[in-house]
Image 1 (cartoon, rainbow, N blue to C red):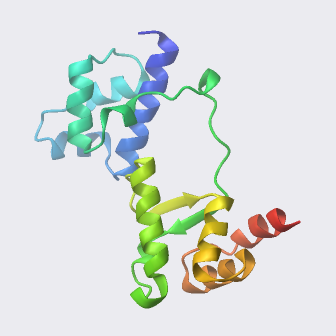
Image 2 (image 1 turned 135 degrees about the vertical axis):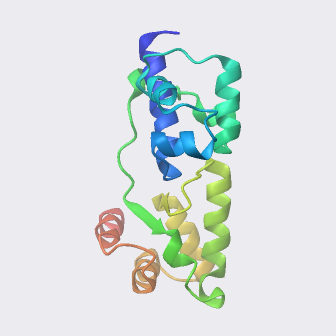
Length: 166
């Protein structure tokens, strides 16, 4: 395994662990010692090669498909730019079903398609917002204001939507 690949794999492992709110010691505790903090940390740093078998076991422990742990095909490990629209899924759960039902179903579908195991926030794209606007029979900017008023979107979302409508 190349050093760069090992580091990319390690970054994916760390991302899944932190999305689940676990520290390295938390992994060791939750696994009842099956996964030692020092070993998982060395996998995450790319200092230690992980076998396919161990990777499959880690994926099972985290409750994610193995492919979620494998580095993507982006050249040089380039990261995507940070998302501009982020739904607060915890707040969304408190919005009455009659208002938020379509958004909750749409968000659940995106989570499933992306394999996003965070559960707290979900980034959406401009196209997602336009689709939701059609579902809610509103313009993207009006829907954005509605989502901000529900506390589901941060007020910074206005800038992203205004930029898109220019």
